[in-house]
Image 1 (cartoon, rainbow, N blue to C red):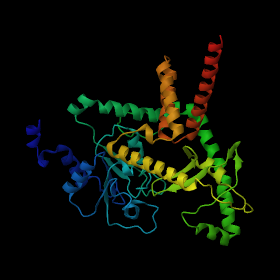
Image 2 (cartoon, rainbow, N blue to C red):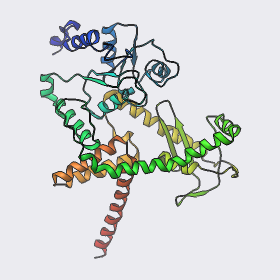
Image 3 (tube, helix red, strand yellow):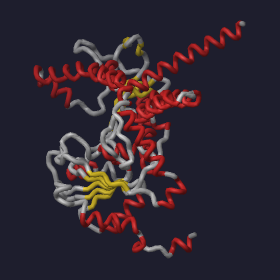
Image 4 (cartoon, rainbow, N blue to C red):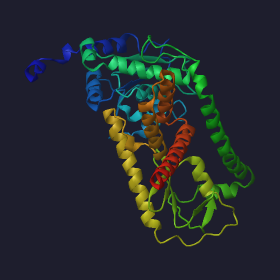
Length: 398
């Protein structure tokens, strides 16, 4: 096999030849690409570097996990339509899936998927980088390179990707084909999730009073607002024990950590628990009259535990994005619980219609876009355990 492969040269690369043809004659046509920006995704850093070498243009920006953070501003300057001081130093960005989330690339409306990811959610995430409010163009042009016929016979990737994307259409009522013209657009099944969407809006409405309070402070007491805004990024304080939603916080530490790509709230005691934004706001809320107290003895130890957890999450996400994997250990606890419960349900279901609904719920929970589903399923899991425990107790007594 090595001898056979060693005789293959760049000139034999029909896939790149097609890409290069599109690059020269189609991808930068003004009527199709008014901003003259192009985004190219691949799962492999080796492929990205290979494309950069073959294209050989000075306006190509190559991004991977190694340089993403360092080049964050450069990416925004050249590809984010919301960035104030725009530049045109780079017009093509070649990137792994480290940019499939967490950044806007919508000065471009043309995207090329140089390979088909195993995790089809990545296709949705990739397109989401350019399909955003503020885009100049009315149309998004999405190019996908499929596996070769011979390769697809071995791994069946076309069918796997198409079936997963079809689930997205059925779940969300998507009205645009993403991977293939064979996708069936079905808006009826999206009605199954009206309740979930209402709950998502409910969560947002619960957050709005906090933002309104912040805006009121900005308007009525600009000096105090500016004082708070200038506080050290590593500000720390102590608070007396208090109850929030029936939970008494005593000997715990609340930690907020962020990077350009990730913001996380943790509640730390013996364990490290990731909080939703809404829960964190409830925990942090205080009146101006409340006086600070001495920090607890375990404070620094708790912060270190939160940092270790944060770094672990980041490392897992980068690893999974580089290799196109979806590791459950990098998900939040609620999502993991929800997915485990749904997987158990699916093994017991015989009804095909119910199976489809559970599959769609699993897709929603996996994407993490509707936290209501994961929260509700986590409550169901607790109820099941409680009922199961009572059943065991009754059986033992009998």
